[in-house]
Amino acid sequence: MKEKTRKIGIQLLEENNLSYLQDAFLTIVEKSISAVARGAKILVCGNGGSAADSQHIVGELQKGFVLPRKLSEKDQAAFDSFGKDGKQIAKKLQYGIPAVALTGSEAISTAVINDNGAEMMFAQQAYALVEAGDIFIGISTSGNAENVCLAAITAKAKGAYTIGLCGKDGGKLAKLSDNSLVVALCDTFRIQEKHLPLYHAYCLCLEEEFFGE
Image 1 (spheres, rainbow, N blue to C red):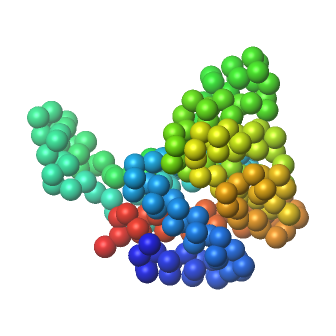
Image 2: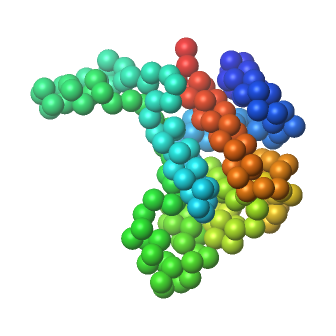
Image 3: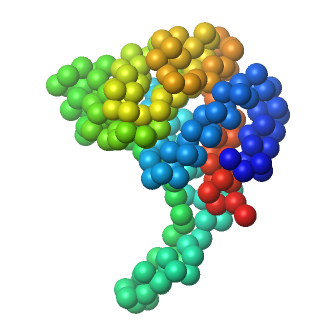
């Protein structure tokens, strides 16, 4: 991990009174950097507000967040044979970190809910998509969302490094995860307010590591 990456994470945690999570956070960032550098992807899921957070995280990873991620001249050249359209695409494309929100497909989600039960909606997707070495992030303010916990188990069984983003005492998800960030608050909305700077710091750190100067 670059020193600037580390400093960005520490500063944002300090600004949001989350320094007590610094060690776990930096470990998670380091594991994620190593995984992405090997070609792994990041998979995220949660319910309700945490479903929105899952998609928010993926949005910050798949395209530029605060840094420009323009394609190199070499990578732009791969589009030259497609003429004017290809050149236009290449100029607008940005490098991305491969990330998937398991909350985004109504077709598979409703099929699993109907056929296998709502508690399996993320686990089934995790089983289909996770490869050994991937990163799985489960978000649950209580730490006890059953569908998120079952997905964490499935991801771990497939060889992923599992991360819990939780609140309260961490619940079952924190115990199931290889590492977890447990916000020491009880009210759901307060926990979510702290989850936001945590995952923004996470996304900023990954972006700096791969796309910073």
